[in-house]
Amino acid sequence: MTLPVSTVLLEPFAEEPTVSVLRLYGDIGLEAITRISALVDDLVEKKRFHLLVDLSQVNFLSSPVVGALMGCRERLMRRSGSIALLAPKPELAEKLNLMGVNLVFPYYSNKNAFLRHFRWEYQSESRSLTLEVPAYAGYVPAIRRLIAGLLLSKGYTPREAFQLESIVDELSNNAIEHGLPIDKKFSISFSFDKSSIHLAVANGCKTLSSEAQERIREKFRNPCIIPGSMRGRGIALVKKIASDMTFRVDAQRVQVSITKMREES
Image (cartoon, rainbow, N blue to C red; front, top):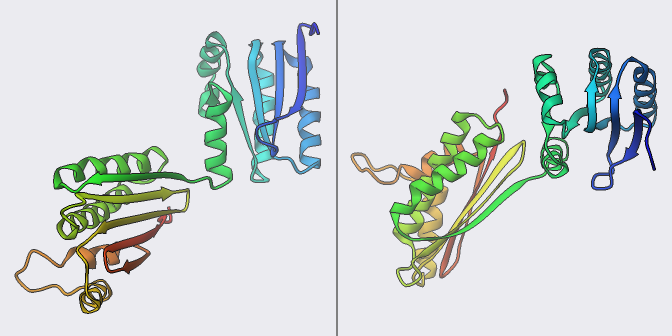
């Protein structure tokens, strides 16, 4: 099908049913504003509040059209919706940046990049990481930095990232110190979304008697700080920082899990 010089089409987004795609073709000028506004009005009427504007086939986008899209953005955002731009050509992106459009609309180079961001922001999609780590203290700083970097990349604050680094450091070193020498590994399971962080650190151990298991449980329930000792402070710190801490002690395995809720901005 041959499209006219200027074309505006609205289509469903197969990969994400809650999003509609506004496809623009050619030189988009003043004459397109009425149709764009009418299409967005129809979306609002149908309670569809997320819009992806495909600019991959656009050569020129006039200032009035940009202004109209900003108006559409305001209407959608009032209903907790969103509008984003997909794949503008380099020449067009440069002109839009000079107009400050990049300060208002997020750009995405491809559909997958958009989907990753959209599902994180609007569908509480989580990110997760599972590791089996050699039980040597030298690996712990790299794990701390990895987890902190993941949090920072998704908008968590330096304070929140540092708090998780502290928890990872304590629980990892605890697993290394008390783990089973034959195994020489411990495991970390880490996941987070926009509102909370979950971390579990587990290690094997020599077979524990019922009495030994209970002593470990008591250490986690009521961490005791011995005056003048450098040990025993970590679990108390973890309990203070975390929103919740749980543990499971079996005859040959110990696991500590924490949840840390996002701090209010």
